[in-house]
Length: 508
Image (tube, rainbow, N blue to C red):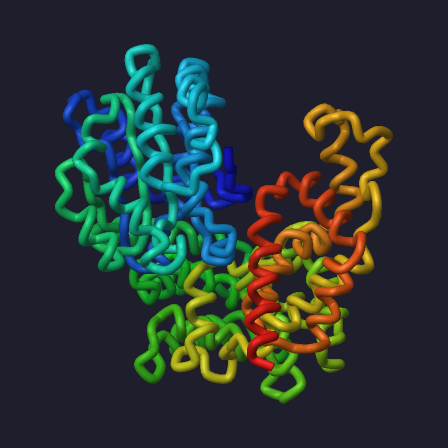
């Protein structure tokens, strides 16, 4: 069954101890509510920056520690290309099978006469046959609560990408789930989500926008005190001012702390504090947008070369279909078409720690710390000089992927001693893959066709395609996909390449 990689619990996102007490207690009370007719779903919603994901991960971690977590599934804007919405219920089903032996047996029986269900992209069938049916069979044998956490449904992709998920969650049949089953879901209150869930009788709705100001400001003040405790020029008065200006947005408070703490040449801590407070609103822009401008103006020079390099790196970060670490980003951009792209991304990324993860650890993927930064950069009316458009990045990524494949693929890439064993029977296969298939090669194997499909025909690009599919390299690619457990996507990739070539040929 399909399993979404990188969609699980992230313990680094938990709430600071002592904060969000009231909302966490409300969720815990809902989980343990004894009424058999208690709502099976709790929908936690609110505007960007309110801390929905932090609460979701905190609850999931607590549930994991007490043995009540069935599954934690998190959507992310920078992983939309992986179509995680098609893997959500299969991933949840596999997690539940790992947790409950009885569920595992019930799930296995589903496939006895219908193995096609293991690979179906049909969300309705996944829910009905792989989750609801096994749960109904084992409900009496499961002790304690079984809770599934779904975080950031609004980041699953365009509205169409979650329509079937919403049809499932909004169905009255959810109320028939076992009384010990709960589903915690977070998202922004987008119109399509609100239309389905807001008045559903089996859904308890909780808005972070309605949390009393006193509670939120208290928690933000505690957070700021911890973040800025080592700065001599920041006392209780300054902490209170920052907390009041945050207006309930934890993400703004985090960004303000990062900005005040950063060691900027020629500015004191007090000056950075004053700048953060004074520039709370500017030209009608939102609180978060103003803070993004403030931080970027302090670390990105307005000289043309610096801005061009910033945009070049961020264009690559935002448009790769899966976050990549620094070394992989560099390995890819060495093959970009334009000479001005040939520089070490660290030149730019080293200073973006307040906004991106992975900039200090070369093994961690580089990605925005908050979805609102992605929205900010890709909307010219909000970001101005820092706007990140798509430009020619798809062609660059397609060429880079094909060049990486051409130089990196080879026969028996993992040096297996025999071809008579299943991948699952090779005891150290994971270590071999890590050593022989680096992140940029793994990425290129899985996504080159998608980048190609997003480009217009180009003779140079077509020659790169021929270098892979026109000789034995295509067999080496299939072998690598098999090792990466991605062979099922090969037919779709080759079909899209065929269509690209046909359409392009007809246009010439």
